[in-house]
Image 1 (spheres, rainbow, N blue to C red):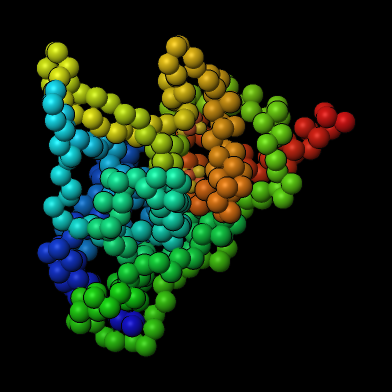
Image 2 (tube, helix red, strand yellow):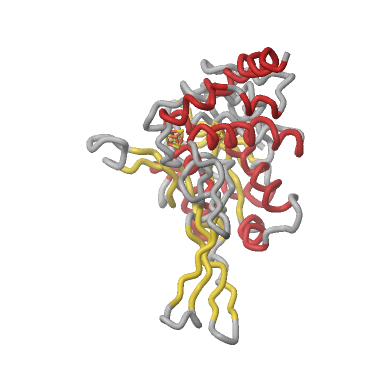
Length: 338
Ligand code: SF4
Ligand code: SF4
């Protein structure tokens, strides 16, 4: 069912939701941006509708709501172990179509890639989604070429235009939230159909592209800060940490913490081995994971074209540009093999 709501009525929706859910949305953090006098839009818990930023893209994704940056899995003593407590409240997240498609990638990795991840599943079962409609694409978005510009797995969708909130409610148990609005037959959320940034993934892409010379360029340009991974809604890697409360190591907690394939130490292994030491090799690994090997295994690209990695890279390295260089790189490798 569709609804039109005033800002006051939509604020009432958020207030009702807060009784049962922790509500996360893109919000403004003043003076928290790249430079000392700039703001940043990132995800956080909101307490009123006016905190939701509809007209700018968030630098970070919704991912923290499902996969905290640091998460205690269990506590241990010498003789016993206790699982960490689940969140007290359920969670509702406002997110765009690309990010809702990213949820599918997270589900694939954590639930359909061998054993189900217990902690992810625990959080996933308690999360609901509100889709933010996109009247137009932001500069670095390339969702249309990645086929993620549309999504339908939301509980309700909302598009804000000139102070009016247009809602498309799919979940029956949420219909009561919008009783203060004007009922409409249907108000589908807005989806973009074109983007300024375009990408082309060559049909004939194969693993041989790893031998191309383009990767060497990133040995110098990339500073392995990992921002691209941490802003990405589809990066799923983590590392484990045991924190001991006592010097004898017999009591403590095990945590999992976000990790990044671009930073030093990610591929260190027992015995002193370390792989992909050069930044270009890391870039090659990340790129092919996002647009080649994940697709070969699961039938769709891992990258959802949100463009955040382009937005946050301090070295102005553009991932969409890297994708667009793959055709030329394949040709170079083919010619060298002749
Ligand atoms: S690789 Fe970049 S564009 Fe693709 S989903 Fe991750 S952050 Fe978004
Ligand atoms: S954000 Fe840019 S500089 Fe930092 S690791 Fe990613 S590509 Fe390299």
